[in-house]
Image (cartoon, rainbow, N blue to C red; front, side, top):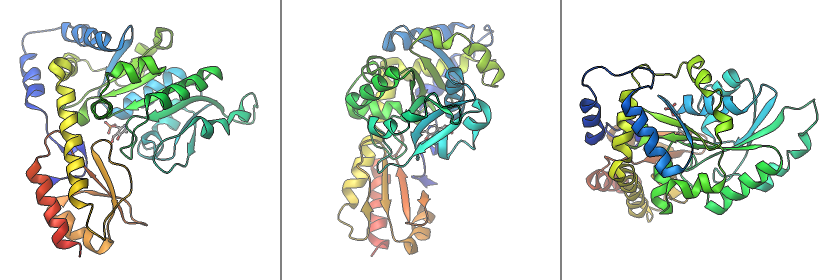
Length: 339
Ligand SMILES: Cc1ncc(COP(=O)(O)O)c(C=O)c1O
C-alpha cells in the first residue's frame, strides 16, 4: 500500500532496527537503569544542555504526562484549537491531568501572545480554571512553524505571568530540518519548559522523550511516569533506538528527506486548478482542498486522510521512506483524476 496518510504509516529505518537487534544481547538492568538509557540521555544532554530526560512509548503519553508534571486539576492549558492534545488524544489530558483545555481558534495552527493575553483576566478568579500552561506544537498539526522569536515571546510572556511553555515536538526533527537550527536553539535557548520529543514519526519503531529544561519540574516525574503506565521495563530497546536516531544526525537526514518530498508534492500540484493548497508547506505535510467527488478514487491508489469533510480538506504527509517515485506517481494520478 502506498500511503500519504501519516508519517507513522511508514516502517522503521534500517539503522534503527539494527540498533534494536544489536541491543538484543544478554541481560541488562530493567526500567531504564541500563547502559543504553544512560548513553541516550547523555546524547540528549550534549544537544540540549542540563536537561532531565524520560523515555516513554507514545506521543500522547509524552504530552499527557509532561503536562501532568506541571499542572494541577484546577489549572488550564491554553493551546491552538488544532492541537493534538485537544483534538486527537481522546480527552486524555482532561481525564489524566484533570485540567481544563482552553482551545484557541487559529488560521495556521499557531497561537501568539495576543491570543493568550485575552485570558489573563482569569488569573486569581476562583470561578475559572487558572491559565498555567501555554502548549504549542513545533511543527504545528498543520505543518507550519513558529520562529524562534515567536517561541521566545511566548515563553517570556508565560514566565512573566507564572505560567509554563510546553512544546509538543512529535515532529521536532522536521522543524529542525527546515529551520536549519539545532534543537537547542529553539527549545532550551527559547525558554521552553517541557518538551515532548518525538521519534516514532521520523523512523523509529516507537519511542518519545519527555524533556524537562528545569530539573525542579521533573522532581516527581519518575512516579508520574510509572503511575501513568509509561515506564517500559525493557527500556533499553527505546533507548537504543534514540542512540541510532541521534547518532550521525540520522534524525536530520530522515526529516529533511520527508520535508523535501512534501515540497516536491506541493510544487507538482500547484498548477492543478481545482486543488488549493491551504497552508504554507514548511515541513512534511501538504494540506489541500480537493473536490470531494475525486477523493475515493485517489484514496484507492494512495491512502490519505480527509481532515475536514465539511470543506473537503485533506492532508498528505510524507515520511522518511517516501520516494520521489511515490510523489511523481501521486502527482500524475492527481493530474489524471482531478479535472
Ligand atoms: C502533533 C502530535 N502530537 C502528538 C501525537 C501523538 O502521538 P501518538 O499517536 O504516538 O500517541 C501525534 C500523533 O499523530 C501528533 O501528530
